[in-house]
Amino acid sequence: MKANCLTIKELTEVVGGGITPRMVRHYHQVGLLPQPMRSPGNYRLYTQQDVNRLQRIVALKQQGFQLNHIRHILAIEPEVSTTVETRLITSLQKQYRAVMQQISQLRQTASALEGLLGRDRNCQLMQAEVLAQLKLLEVETKVGAEQLEKLWSGLDAQVHAHPEDFYESLQYLLPDLCDRSAIEQDLIAKLVLASGDVSLASFVRLHPEAIATSREAFKSGCQVIADTSTIAAALDQTRLIHLGCRVETLIGNPHITTAKEAELTFWQEQKWREKLQQLEKGCVLVVGYAPSVLLAICEAIAHQQIQPALVIGMPIGFSHAPAAKRQLMQTSVAWIAIEGTLGGGLLAATALNGLVESVIDKPDCHCYLQHKAVGSRQ
Image 1 (cartoon, helix red, strand yellow):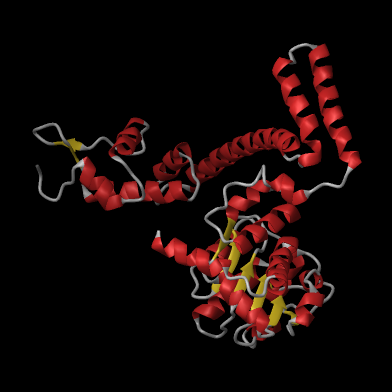
Image 2 (cartoon, rainbow, N blue to C red):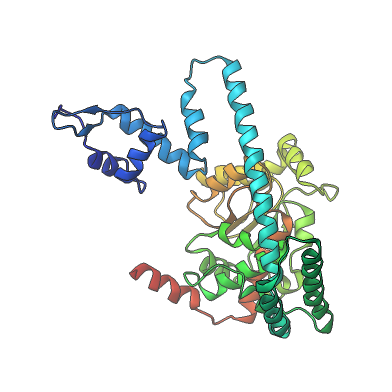
């Protein structure tokens, strides 16, 4: 065996990230990893160059890229022409559209399942009847398709008899949240209801100290800062006033009503950046529009210019917003965020309002502390 070379098992141990020898062999087969040199005993031998390449593959895979995307990306060397880069962008755009088409089809499937499963107790007798008839239905014919429409019409007719029980419906649709405290579960349910998208539950992230820190801050009558007046108006002023909390707006221009306007205004007017650095210690920040505001908050925290108790970071955008959220989740303060491009003012306000409601309705609840203790033992 050559000096400084690794076996396939040693390679996976060095790289980590859940990589197994079987996955490495698969990457050889699909052309992601070049075939390695062999020992006299025909064992695969890997160099530091192989380690570096596999680490890049793992990193890209963790970011959500599929293997065929990664193969194209790694094929582009730094010195290639912009023409080749343009072809790669075009190829990735084509693959992105294909992925979005698949998501659209899956969304249709999810909607059909939600329409069937997301029924409260009052609709379940009709639900059982529809399920029984679906088993027997032949939809290949026009008559069969018409029968299917009648089934849905019959099921939908039941909704006029009573109001919808949202939380009962969610019991059948939400993913398993047993690893979350009761307050977190309720907060996630509120965010799902605000967005109308059950898949949102998988993207909500909370710092381990977010619940405890926010409750202490609200009970002490903290300053609450929203990035725009639109979001400030959506906050539960009645409960916040009851707790002695003061609501203020960072971008103090009531005419700013969109994410685009908030983003440009914050960039163009230095006074809003200066105002950010004057916030009280222990405040709660609510960002639902401008990713640049959240980026500036992260920078101010890193330079110890501000010390908020909690940052709710849910700006919208397709490049800056995901980056801002990743930076937020690396800061030293407590935070609540929604990964990726998902977010918006309504969700940011819903998160704040849900936390405030739990403080008033459940002032002595310690489920989040008990849950954290259990999690630390596991």
